[in-house]
Image (cartoon, rainbow, N blue to C red):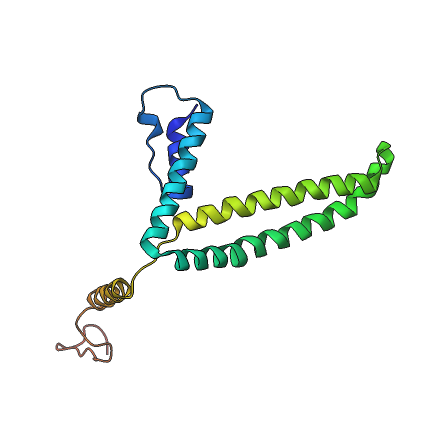
Length: 169
């Protein structure tokens, strides 16, 4: 089992550093799964404590409605259209196309629900809320960096040559 790769994926999806590769012992898959779930739950509880329950509830609604459900539902409808176009061929395989459509449609719907859950948890773990003071401080720092990168001379100042031009006139 590639524990280092698993550590990287967990960090990429949930911003958690579990250091599974440094445990030095072989872990059982179920124990690893339980540890990941427990750490994610702890992370979300800590965020709820830090930001407050009303704000976390609002974030959860926004994330689920706007990005997860909306996007996944559109993809599911498109996939159902593709399924409908090709389902008639099942009759040649001595299968009832209506039953096959129902079965595959249900499987696709359950996959969509699973993707919505995964996407929502991932985005809730990744979201960071900044206080107004922090945002103002970051914006001021960006303005300072912009001014320093542009130099001290104003953009409207015209540069004049002090010496005579070299070459044919």
